[in-house]
Length: 587
Image (cartoon, rainbow, N blue to C red; front, top):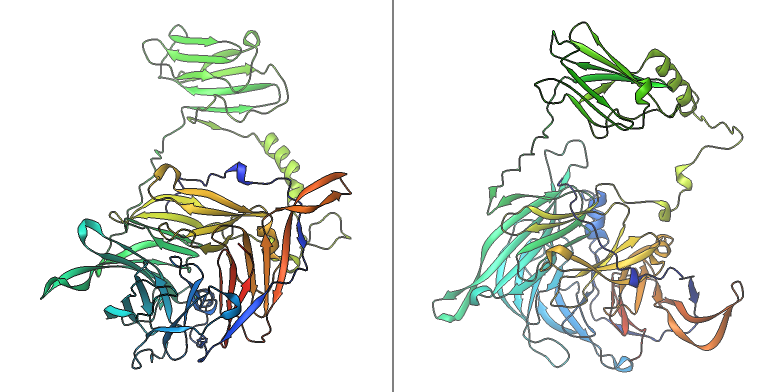
């Protein structure tokens, strides 16, 4: 794994250290629903898809897709292979979802079929997977409520193995229309003998237009480049830069490029650490009163040739005609008048330094000098052992307070846990395929990702202490590649207490965040807003100017929630039989 070389810079102006809590509001949230003509088929995991990574990638998949180019427009795929879209303009007059494209009937019959997945590449293109291993690039035309055009497939390829589409972008380098598509697979790995037996792969495909027989008026699309990354965990976040120049991945375990166009990539050779094993040029030991150092000298040296100078804080020791052997600042002050030196065995010089302050032990002889070796006497070893005895015990519960039970890890709550130490956010360069920026996420739990501006990369939300901070990737700003753009106060702590949480998201304008459970309920957490009436905090005796509201919505359905998306005004929740629209904000 590449060493961390970057850290996220928090904008302190977006934090609210005085935030108290969310206030439960009993205001009803208007809820509308549309009954679907054909059910949304939840693809159940097979017995062979038993790992945690299968569950993260496919068992928790969000079947509902939000169109970031057209406000309040959502899409999904039903059990008949229909790609359906619904654009909401008037909540009280919801129409039926309209068919935009139908996956051919002969597709999607693989034994290990996954759920169909969709990524909206641009305002006029989309990438679609049938769940059985076939990728479609579709020209959609302008979407939205006013458009009734059917989508046209201009590229189709059978990749051989099922996958889901994670992300896609469209750009036009040098006048050539190009699309970048990122696919996720979980594959059997014969080399993985100690773990689950599976590995996770990301395939980054570049598809570009070429001139057909009729010239550029008859464009065709073909694969120009394939790059494969592998890792041991499903990424929390993976997205291609808008111009296709790089890739960002956030995951618990590191990813690395392994193949380009079918050819293996040579793994980078780790640079050997420059640690030269040399014999120490001096040995030293100490007591509470003094320090004794034994320095190696040229054999046969006389006392007239020794150059020795000692002050309260510095020492210089050498032989006439040679560079100084020992020179630098002492760890602590000494008494030069009470210190001395003597030549022993014609090949070493022993220096005795009287500490000016008795008692404290030195951690080194000279500040920053690593050329010496500290020798611990038997007396000091016995003393250290005695001081550290309390840290060890032969008893299973070495608690001196015997009446108190030992800590039970099962009593810890989710909010007390942290992600793995190896969790990282990495930016890969598209040409060299090497990581350029690596952030150690440490205890910053990944919460969700959200499309805020369709021309930018998706934002992602991380837990920082108790808050949830939203970060916007800026690949064109290498010195400030991830910008802190919004904060949801205490959401990091609040979401950890929701045991049945399945989805999390927020509005593109950050006016609210929402958590969705497996069944029925959604929790909405609004940003602090001014209150209309005068409120006082009785504990602190001050007037409250703003209140952050929490609301709970419960659907009239007993079916699992399969999709969960938020816009600035509405929250969309999809079950197998209905699409629910919750009016959260009024413009």
